[in-house]
Image (cartoon, rainbow, N blue to C red):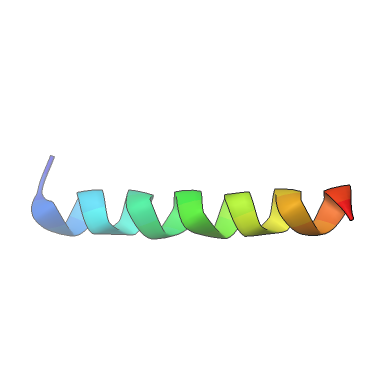
Length: 25
């Protein structure tokens, strides 16, 4: 994968983690 794609996936994963934490509250 390109570096750009890796950054995109990393950002997406961090957004999902934040969403999941918000749901658990």
